[in-house]
Amino acid sequence: MATYAILELDIIRWAEARKIIPNSHPQTQLLKAMSEIGELADATIKNDQDGIADGVGDVMVCLIVYCALQDINLVDCMELAYEEIKDRKGTLLSNGVFVKDEA
Image 1: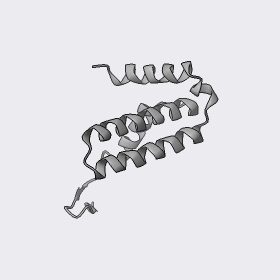
Image 2: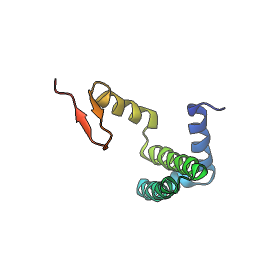
Image 3: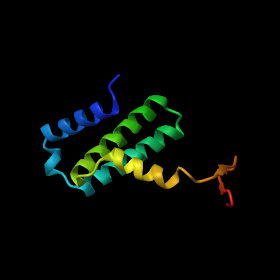
Image 4: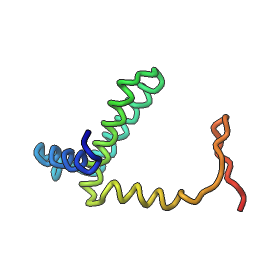
């Protein structure tokens, strides 16, 4: 199994070989990611595990290419998001509502 870093580089090289990078635009990749999220939602509703795996992968490919076009690193973005949420306290209730702990 490849590491995330190797897969990310492979995806970027794939996109460069096909001239997606630099000839595409971030907006185009964002719209493609939104389309793939729709397909992922459809697979989720249908409980289609193969479709879910494919959908998650397709969304990630779009986000990696989007980040490359924006000259940012997806892992750095995830790290920023984690730094914002890591100290949050609370509980997700069974009804789907997240209740923050009062500090």
